[in-house]
Length: 100
Image 1: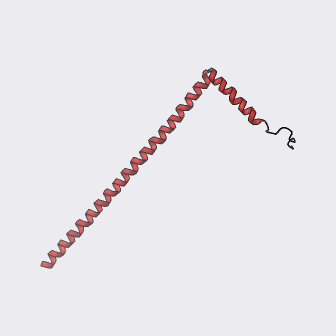
Image 2: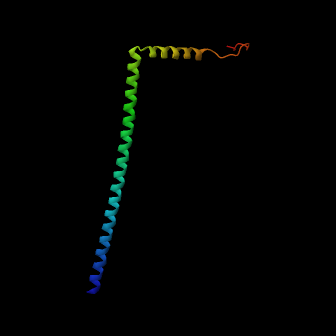
Image 3: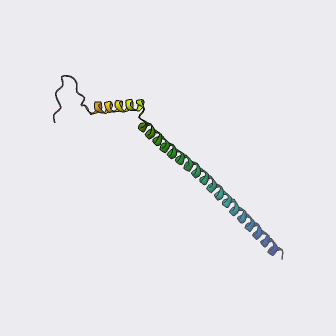
């Protein structure tokens, strides 16, 4: 009779330890999922805020361009002049013309 009781005691200890390990691993998985979800939420908010800031910047620049402010017209003229300078070929004085 004593052996039968000892075997049952060992079995219950084994089942208790196995259950405790299962709960521990489940807790670890839930904690890892919570951390992943929190990081995903942080990155989502960061991307959404950057997108919204970019859209707000585009609307603001468009509003300023349509306003007809003198600084805007001066900036347009300077950009146009820079584009014209970029289109001209750069040659040294006295150099031969480029073959076409």
